[in-house]
Length: 188
Image (cartoon, rainbow, N blue to C red; front, side):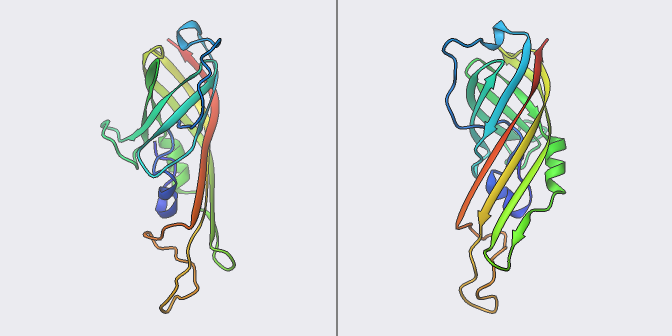
């Protein structure tokens, strides 16, 4: 699942649609996926610069693990349209093709005149399938919102001195992002 596309969106994660999130699991006293027929789940992702990141899911069931961005052949690919989610009780696959397409056509907001700040936000659907373990037979569509902000450096010399460095190799001075969403799932 590739959540950010394009030169600076790739810095955010290079992958949105899995459903990654840093956080705690809430297993104590909560229902597991095997004990429910479905319901609303909530996900949130803190993007990083790799193809794999932590994920936490809460709501109708609670679980955590990793989400790895893959291509249609199942090969790890930070720019892939799919995400392999591996949780403690099983796993499933996310198809983020529609979200990634929307992200690719959504322009960022860039302030190159005063502070070199960059902001990108997009919302769209992802679908879940190919469940295993406690998630066998999972299906559903979630709405995901991905946001990314960064402050880019300025050129320190040359003919562009003082201008914002928007080049593909520019390393942001600071950046942050979030991927979160919710939707209904069912089993079998």
